[in-house]
Length: 114
Length: 116
Image 1: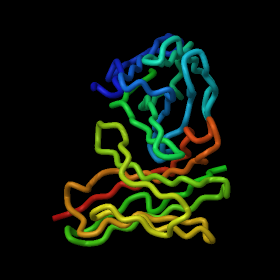
Image 2: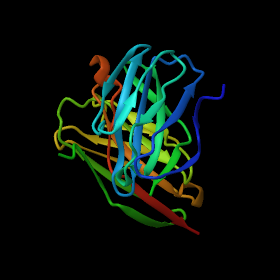
Image 3: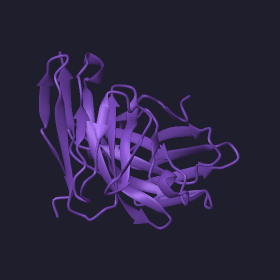
């Protein structure tokens, strides 16, 4: 299993540009999520999905869109990039662990918006 | 409102020493408390987790201590090694709560450096 994969690893955007961060998992997990990680801020939840066709907002959803057409893929779209979106983005998928869930994280995408 | 507070921000420990990282939470509905380990350039990975029905859980050199009345939990790394140098995150979620079970609230992280 490749686990959770993310592309690209690095990206530089100009303010106002749009792009899609790709995330895929091959573990047949229903739950997937996107986090951003900023220095001294920990990981903050952007959007999540509990299955194909179902998405919802997390703590910091503004400026981001998601969709979930398949179990495997959960892309994150930046509609009009802003410098405040400079961050490291992690995608995660979850498997049941008893009555809670273990999250598997991808390797991350480092995004810089100039 | 920060729901999970983690301290210290950084920690330097001598090889063979004990590393202790503390977390406090506010939401009494939280009932699943994992710790994640992150090496530079990598995504976080689950290290150890605890439910509040026990006060301590040990896996190898890693131990979680949990104090439900104080709403605090801590990670102890015994016999710390240079290979333990990483950033550690505590987190919390509400198990058995549908979609809420999936949502982790993270602390801000502790950068641990173990020096030889």
